[in-house]
Amino acid sequence: MQENTFPSWYTVQIRFRDLDPLAHVNNTVYFTYFEEARSHYFDQLKPWLEQWPSKEEHQHQVEDDEPHNPRIQTGPRGSHYGMLVKEITCTYKLPLIRSDTVEVGVCVGHVGRTSFVMEHQIRDVNDHERIFATGRSIMVWCNYYTGRPYPVPPSLRNAFEQMEGREYPLVEK
Image (cartoon, rainbow, N blue to C red; front, side):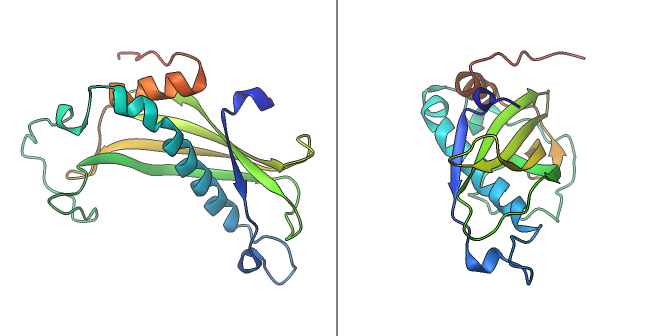
């Protein structure tokens, strides 16, 4: 992916605890870097989400006797809708070491009816051609009560479009 396809970059602080006995970043830590960068991306969406009238109260539907999913614990005042990670992958290109200065790029590559795909890239802050890893997360918008997929809200779709500078039209089946 080209640099201009990532509208959000998050600088990573490589910590000593991220290292394995070979003195490079442990493979599992890359997923933490992706998670931190996704969180940063969603923080950047707040201006568009706050101006859109569609909030959680517009997402409620009749539960149609669908049972509560006990594996998802939400309190009575917690969110009833949100995202869950369905799948996440990482392709390692170069090992990261403590002295590397890196950033993680994030973009939304696709928005479907109930899910969206986020692409990730870990690169050197100063040498953008030096790519350490790429990744992909498939996120599902979910009704936390039932644990079932639920349509991505128009407010989130609009925020993605504003952030990415492109449209994600809803394709009906």
